[in-house]
Image (tube, rainbow over all chains, first blue to last red; front, side):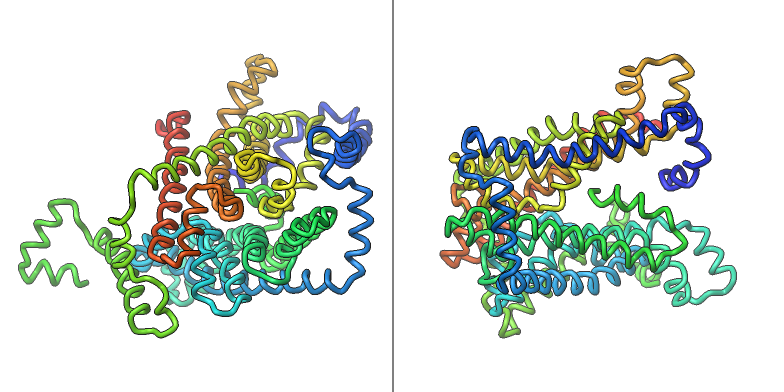
Length: 288
Length: 269
């Protein structure tokens, strides 16, 4: 809560720091763009140089030009589109089912003390087990491979969404509940008009975070048990010595993961128009 | 309320329990775990689809078949890999996060590069890591390092940028220099979030170590779970999952304890 106050005050409060820099402002803006481009370019330059001069075992790693060439070819093939859509569907299946279970559960746990006592300790015991460790059980339990990979995604996305929903409900100002009760609200009204909207910003944080972990889980799931999908493709590229494809696959996964988190953020932003400043705090709390 | 009825009917047991510090909350919390185990048993017993999954009793029985020597070696192996990756990640990520958060130039210079690499999940690095490093240990440690790196950088950076602006201003009016500002004002104020980042990081390193060990098959808890999967000893698999979860939870608690030690000022207020 303190941080949010701070970001709200920032434009008024932080101005004297800006004031000192003002004469230099035009200079700094240009410096920023220059350094930013330099920063991104340097990745490719350093990577290319390491590969080119064959430092240590970088001889084995394909260079940027090779990766770009293979990438262009791969994007044109139908295989790329099948892999991409299959991985996306698995992530989506796991993520949507996790959200459908975790959000109502989290709202109830945050809202109702008795329900919280009855469920939360068990979830707290299960939480530290990483999603990847469920792979053997998922293979055993689901005869259908798609379901087992989606289940791994489900486990990965479930806990970030759940925990953020619970925190979201618990951070709601108690005065809102008291005010609503004074005005004669039924519990149902309190739930729909206070608990749900109050927890939404936090839920959106959890959803963006859960999406990232679901992408991580899908890659692991596909590497270990799968015939299609981006995770399987990069592992196959390794075993078939088609090394540039590994890096192309990594880039594809990175772009898809980043894109889906961005989509979630824009959707949830539309749901909470009263919290414009949430974009900044969301960006920071993605890694929390 | 059921509680008043029980007390009114004169059940002395409850009063005694209450004196021992037992109340409805603890009863419900224990009930939660008991109900979970009960539901698990019933599902396995009476549902055809679940019959392959071991019952809680089987898992409990498997606990006594464990050879303490063997399992401790596996735990130690995984723990060393986790801690190795975590500390390398801390040693590189923390200074980088401080630089990005504290210096404008460093922010312009390093932040875009970090931001471009970040969306690639650590698990996607497995094939490239296997290709690059010959030694299995260094492969696994690199993967755990990569998992720990980004949460530490981002939370250090975020913690520094969210420091209440009044604190540095007050320090400035007392005439503090730039290094003093960093060590005495900014870092202590950012410390809660830095420790949050470390907690997230240790969670991801445990995830990474399990994934890497499952693929590398060079010992460790991940491999232990995977091995018992291949020989169809499922109670051991669930036990292994439990041990991994326990180790992860203990590591996270240890970071909490260290954090509380360094942030004693939080308890004053």
